[in-house]
Amino acid sequence: MAKKSTEAMVGTFVLMGLIGLVFLALKAANLASFSSAQTYKVSARFDNIGGLKVRAPVRTAGVVVGHVSAIKLDARTFQGAVTLEINQGIAFPQDSSAKILTAGLLGDQYVGIEPGADDKNLAGGDTIKQTQSAVVLEDLIGQMIFNKAADAGSAGAAGSNSAPASPAGAKK
Amino acid sequence: MIAKLVNRLGARVISAMASVGHAAFFLLDLIRHSPTALRRFGLVIDQIHAIGNRSLVIILASGTAVGLVLALQMYYALVPYGATESLGLVVNLSLVRELGPVVTALLFAGRAGTSLTAEIGLMKAGEQLAAMELMAVDPRSRVLAPRFVGGLVAMPILAILYSAVGILGAWVVAVQLIGIDPGNFWSIMQAKVDVVRDIGNGVVKSFVFGVVCTVVALYQGYETRATPEGVAYATTRTVVISSLVVLGMDFILTAMMFSTP
Image (cartoon, rainbow over all chains, first blue to last red):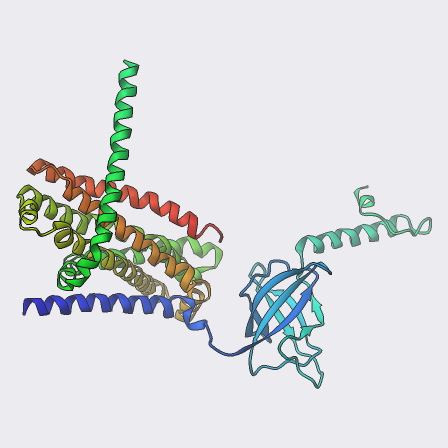
């Protein structure tokens, strides 16, 4: 009898451990979000992928429709070749465009797909032709300074010389 | 004078290294005898009961307390950034990756390790182990191996339960007391915590700590001097050595597992 109750208590103990593990995996981690749904692969080339990472979400109208499965460098064009896995059943027109966007001001980057209007749809293995790279903050600031300098240069040298001012000209 | 100091230092290092090597062979011996122990599964069940079930209360109490307190403190840190919804994530990651395995191992060393050492040590002091050998019963497969397997099984389960009740404790503070939206509380966790990377590595850690704590406890008991003082000394050393090894191993394991963000 004492033997039986020991076995029952150990059984309960192990069962509690299993329940704890299931709780951690399903409720407190991402196991539930691994969908077994069928996907098809589409690739897209970006001039600059910014901080995009593998497993980042792919969204359309803010809804997650897939994820990034691989990121490589295309050694011939020096572009980032991004492979997207999109859930089967969601078909995009062939002239759809892909952008790399940022969630919030400092959030993670994701791929946004803007649907086009073509009659034919993208199939597995196709490439999205129209892409827009990630916005790089440094480039944006550089461009702003350059524009400022150009404005100042054309205003300061009005009439005499209309050559575009260099960024160095902004220092005066 | 200096030569004497150097001598003594050398002796200390050599004896420390020798006992590390001795303990490693002891571990190999235990692993070799584990299949025999598994064939007499009743013995292992008894040990899981003694090591696991009896440690449950302190593990659950400590896990809940840590979850509650961690949630409260993190809340104050997160409020200025308006990121209170991430409270669950912070508590979850710190419990699953670090606190769960480490604190469970420290409590395990204090609760189960000491009792193992004292039990084996007294068996040795009472010459029960020698008597077993005389009867051609190998004490390593009859006494030590079931305890080793029991510790190995119990430790990961205890660590998982520790993390689980800790997260539930954090949920009580965050959702019930502070009033954070429960949907955000869980969904941010689910978005950022990875099953293999975070929870899987936490379980691997606790398994390693289970090996460390059990082997240290059994080794100290088996090698104790057969006197009352010897057993007392061995029990103390079990806690000190287990804790230090767990803390050291934790740094190495963390550096290996989570070196990239």
